Length: 151
Image (cartoon, rainbow, N blue to C red; front, side, top):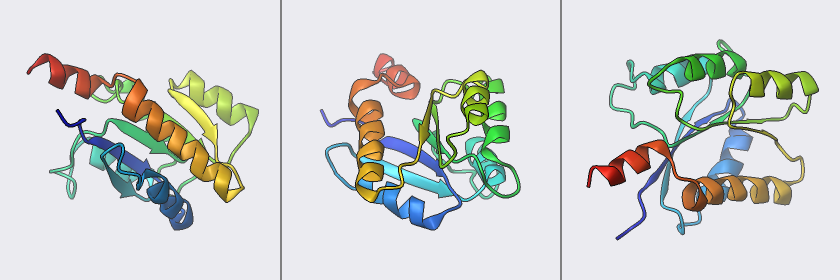
């Protein structure tokens, strides 16, 4: 039996960081599909399957930047974790900020993890691969668990 496809929503306004995340997920030992939006408003529309994302899959994992235009990651995290249908999706804050205030407020809003983006490209790649491996191989994810129970 093939492992299930890991659906990942990347909420990131920096296209350079997005390219680095895509590169780290390119290893096919964990089949995955990355979905990308550039701000929090589109992230919420994607998650709620609102236009133009009516056919969007439910992500298994959200990589969420904090500092974005329109609706920032803090607001998105609060809305995700307050929504009964979305709150079980692991949300990893993945940001350049190492501010204690951002870290504490993210965990207070029920972030599943807070990861500061490394500046060094090799470290950036390693960190994303570790996130991918943990959620792709080790963690039991809600959608995948319910899918397995229904088979």
